[in-house]
Length: 167
Image (cartoon, rainbow, N blue to C red; front, side, top):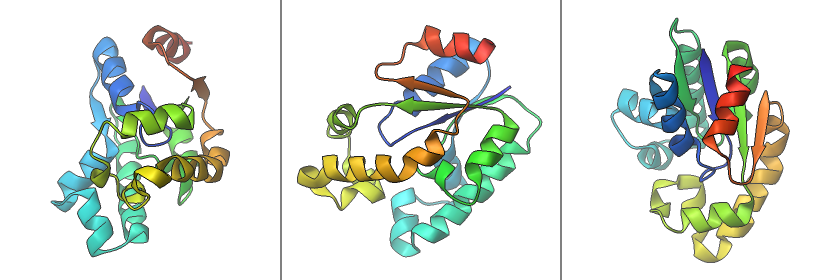
């Protein structure tokens, strides 16, 4: 079984992904970390030295490589991964997709507790523009996220996710 968690930055993909992987006793994969490992540099450095389009190509290639593997895993995708190069279709062909639909206000509260500089698409917004940026991202990405096999809104409970996956 391949499980893909999708959603905006700060929606809980990594946190829930690790929990699901632990319960199911399968590996957890963070797509962004895999890109960093392969490239030998941080995502923010890739954005700075190249550009977003270059990063999206790397992201799509890494996602396709993982989808083609004959092994089970739980993956936290990057927030934009489903939105480029037919990646959402690739995800749905390879496994189960779960959209974590968290309200923008909650995402802002979560992101403000982290190092925003690690998130290249949000760093430029600053704290004053963060909510507007998140809402804009949600609006533009929702049509991709809604293609997920399952959607969970608000505070997601691990038991609910596991029940949906096992059906």
